[in-house]
Length: 134
Image 1 (cartoon, rainbow, N blue to C red):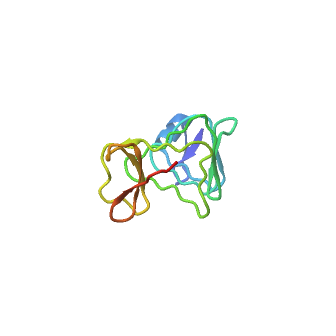
Image 2 (spheres, rainbow, N blue to C red; image 1 turned 90 degrees about the vertical axis):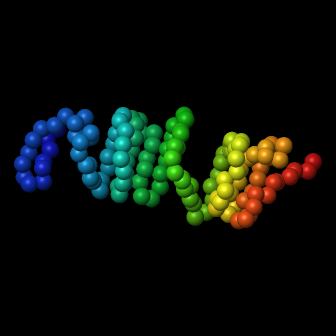
């Protein structure tokens, strides 16, 4: 692959070396087969991942189509929509052994802290156990 240093000087590089060491900027389309992004990725155009394309990310809509997907965060993660969020099958909230001390109002957890496994709702000041009747 031919690359430039921005000053008019051309050199040759393998695609692996280019992806590992350079910043790639485009307002067009980038198509990747395999690989990873180890730092920030900003998409102003369209990023297609896989061949055939399995995932598309752009600034208007995004589709991720995989057999299994893990989104991992060591901090907070925001899932936001201006309309609604739909879980098409089952939402699982793993049981917590401790309650968060000051979460955002409206938070939900599952705990057995009162001796019975059940969901709890944070009303802004305390955890409220949700009871079910049959």
